[in-house]
Image 1 (tube, rainbow, N blue to C red):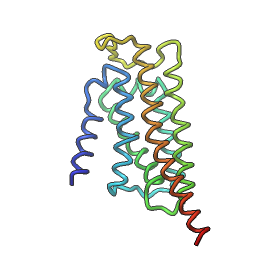
Image 2: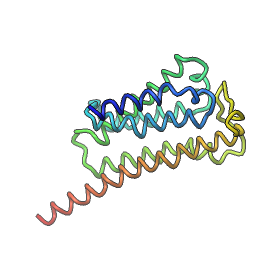
Image 3: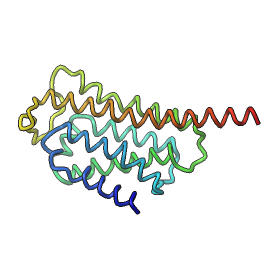
Image 4: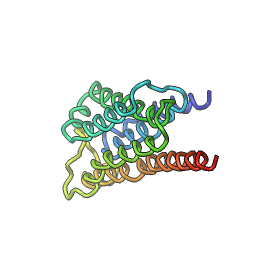
Length: 192
């Protein structure tokens, strides 16, 4: 019960945070909360989506990369409906992905670890571009970075850093856990 309440509170913050319309880094923080925290916790809490792990992986990577294309997220940010579509599809795709990585399918832990690592590397690309771009290519339509003491470029760099480092801590942590579990199971099978 406590996990369910915590998940609802997390989803409410991620979906309704008003600062995310003014600051690009806050918007990327929404994405981070949805894909790296809420979605895996939803799967672990029992909301598993029965889908092929490979299809879930492909959906997640494709939808993630699409919404991090500047024209797509600017379009989504221009209306409440676009924003709901963006955040909802990211959460649904992330749940499909984490269902394959953490769910009860027949995929072995080695394959799950590889799936998580490859998704991490591919979803790092937009964050790396944002962090190292010499100009602001990612801004929100109602961007007000100055209100928070930032320039649009600094806001974008912060967003890229958020996408790159905290997300990787989750993805690489899960992949490492799965890899260790896979090696442990392999070692147990050999010594038995």
